[in-house]
Length: 614
Image 1 (tube, one colour):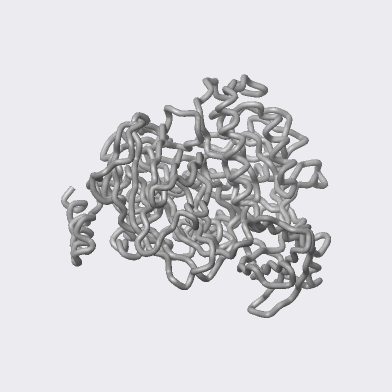
Image 2 (tube, rainbow, N blue to C red; image 1 turned 120 degrees about the vertical axis):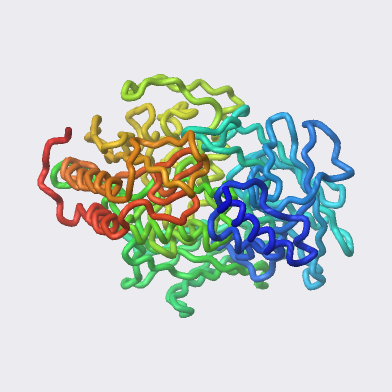
């Protein structure tokens, strides 16, 4: 405890050095990452938050807001409880509050802002990266609207509510956590075992943005390496028949291809025959400039990026279905990544911290990350694109978990959701796919995990595939299995075992391992920790890991196409991470892991002889 008190003492000294910092300090005395000390209250997450549609003008509203926690249904507060550091959830240490909201209360935020004079004549949008869960927004007392969903971005046009000088924004949030039907991932009101602390309120960047009266609202890019072209769909507000969209593709600031379209049809751009393909070994990206013209006049212009790559499946010469990248077989191998932080919960303390887990995963020889039951901020996916990391994207589970017996689940019973619950799921799954569609790194969609809220599996998998036919669909990772989608996904702890096989689908082990090792000084809880086994040191843990990884190479010759090791870091009571929760220790021999992981990722380049599958 002395060490933790010292860490927090340093943090408090840092933030109390000016009057503006005096009201904020981290809440609680649990472990923190090294980036917590770098948190600058006056400059929180200053990086542009939407890399796929970037504008030069914007104002970051992260920082200290007023907050109040009131019983649900109460009127807007006239006084507030104190200050909260946005965008850290109210339950987190870095929020400076560290209080659980609960399903019977509402969280209120307030702050003032001014609009730059140079924005005169333009519309002003108020953007939220993500808020968990039901959000209502007022500007200068005028209600702008509501948004339900804890993982996807949304915005309000606040132009008509603005006034000269200071403006006031008020936000109300209700989040029932596991008492509601909404997607919530690993959050529960009583955390422990594999379940974690609730995350309520604003947890991604809030920002203002000026746009023209008619502006680009969304961009959707689809590469076609077989056809040698790139498709760009652009959405604008109030579309008209004579609108024109022009797209330029740039490589190192040089235009290498371009195209245009009228009537808001897709822009189809022929790409050079020698264009570079994106892969983990060579993550080549192209910059985009998208311009919107109306009546021959430039209305709006944004920057984006894309990559030429293709995710697909095929049946190999032995009859096994295989995952492919750019028409070549590839074994997908990576960790289960929860994306949780001891100091910020859902929110990494800095952009450097957000990128760190991906960089470390790459250094350890993996080529893929399974993003587990969470949707990350947009910049996380942009980092994966830049670094060359494939991503399996889960839909966060919600509603109630189905009771089931492990390994007795083939065509097992499904949850029967209410019409309200089903509508909530369908709306947010579509929103998740929409906001992530254009990131090159996304390689697999996973609608369900382990029967958690799993319903209408065949229908949901078929809809997912029709909505995005460019990526394989993993209907249920470790869940109830139905003949649908592209993938059969097994969970096998701790050793990877193929106890089922589907000859018509890609076969993967979506979770295995979970080797438990507690390192004192790096624990969320000094006791009540959980993992598979109780290994005592780096050497023993590495030996166990190598045994499992080498087994994957053998299974690849029997049709295994991918695997996910549990997990990237310890998380709260789970002590089965490759790294400690505070990211200060890699718990195994990094060089040994890098070597064997690289061999697994390349095992289909030189397949091993087949051995027994059990």
